[in-house]
Length: 421
Image (cartoon, rainbow, N blue to C red; front, side, top):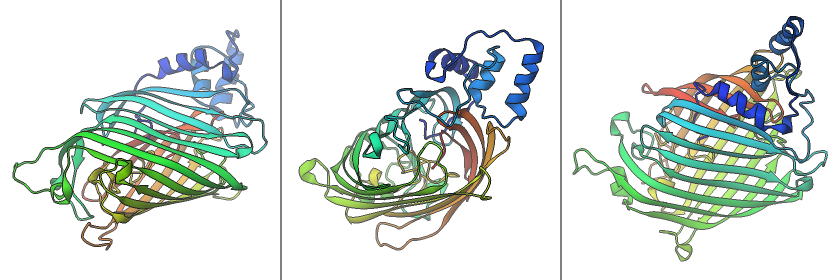
């Protein structure tokens, strides 16, 4: 899954062939002869210059297509799709060893000066843990940012572990669970003032073939005590307020983002229970130092159960955000509770002046309440560092590979096609 971790260990030469042959949107020039002087100049430009460079430029140099791509990277063209495709082998905390093909598409829907960049992300994934999943997230802006169409869909068969409720669970508390899932979340935002939007939507989630494997078999798990069912349905409308200064959510530049979403679920619409939740998602991006291209980013993702009893699989948990990035340092679903408060800060910096290679350092903390009261129990920190490689300079997409740590020996690889937040 794009948001679940892609380790770039294979498929690179195929990727270069695929993109250089398929993306006429990148204005590829074919078969320009290259002598040794030109080759030396290209090497200098690619590895030590200030002109923006990405993996496709490197691939073009490898296969002998000198000067293969245009350099007006700040000007995306209306009507062109800027595609990044990534076949990979991967090893992550969530999936173990897996293979996938994923990609994103960035585009503009009009020539309006300040129109936000639209993007669509999807992937096809299979792991040796028998996990199979196809997510699709889209963020499409219409002319003059008048409307924003936000899509979050997924189909998954995803055996994993659950560890119980609250912040005091241990790794030894984990046991296998399995389920099939369909999630269809759709929101339409309307501009009510510059950068401020009001949205209505509908969230539908259906889980079936749910099972938990308990050893010994007579153990009474938190899930059993909470209310275990072999199927689970959540269904209901959402009301959203959005403030968004980001022009490109794939790799945000300085600005602010704030979203408040009220989600309701009703039995008359097919839900198992009547319940409601409130999401508060806040992000801030600043240049640091001021005159540099480095970014200091902050993220707060807080999710509260307002009333009712959400299904166990719909309770807030580690990596429960739309792109499953929350809580680097811990496996998905490591912690779960009725309410979640989350904070993260990340520093993104260039290593090469042409933007080809960069790095990040990050620190985060999550806290959950139990189900018997609303008291937050403990703070669960995570931290780590990562590498960024410019995958597509037109959409400013980075291939992101991070290593994160948590407490009690938790650690592993986390990665994305596009920034974490």
